[in-house]
Length: 222
Ligand code: HEM
Image (cartoon, rainbow, N blue to C red):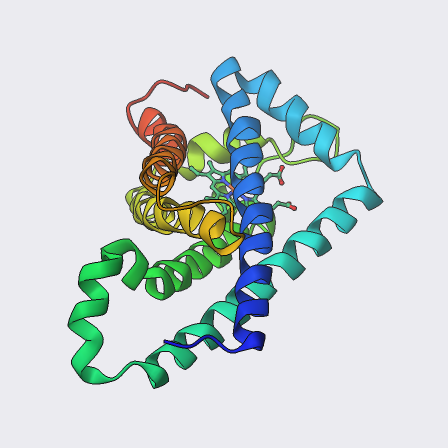
């Protein structure tokens, strides 16, 4: 299929915003991992973040813009692709690009739903009033208690596991795809990029699901 100049431009912007989003999920996983060092460590990390004041809001706005652009362009490009793909070629295209590539729009939209739920659960803090307790007189919520109690009921754990499975699916194709879009891979390096991409997705999957699973296993006490 012939790509128009504007769709090439949008693909490049999707690749750049994709890098910003992957960087965020890697840094967020590292931050969340302070839970493994105990209640004081995760609460100190949360307190440090909140003490950054206006910088937190600048960061949030940049992330929100990257996320919104990535979603809008992703939907537009998918609709354009579908309109331009003759029915007879659908099977050929699937064979060439694979399951991860064909389901990018679905995994992306599931991730959007996950992020909305996640923000309501841990940032806006409205879904489970019983898990939000104050951290002494600091004026902050006890993030350790929130995380441990937050994963003591079945529904949130299932939602996070499903969300992380889709994160794996999305990143393990998207990471490789962004290098292709930016012209940073060729026929020779493509298989290496494919493997690296799956590895990044797998590390994120294992890292993120280990938190609810270890909490369910009773490793963290309140
Ligand atoms: C097991 C998986 C995860 C856990 C346990 C977790 C934990 C948390 C916690 C505790 C907060 C609130 C921090 C605070 O206010 O002090 C938070 C915020 C957030 N998380 Fe996650 N997270 C997970 C996965 C993800 C994923 C996969 C994404 C993105 C796809 C994500 C995106 C966000 C965003 C955007 C925020 C808001 C940051 C802000 O306040 O500016 N999280 N997460």
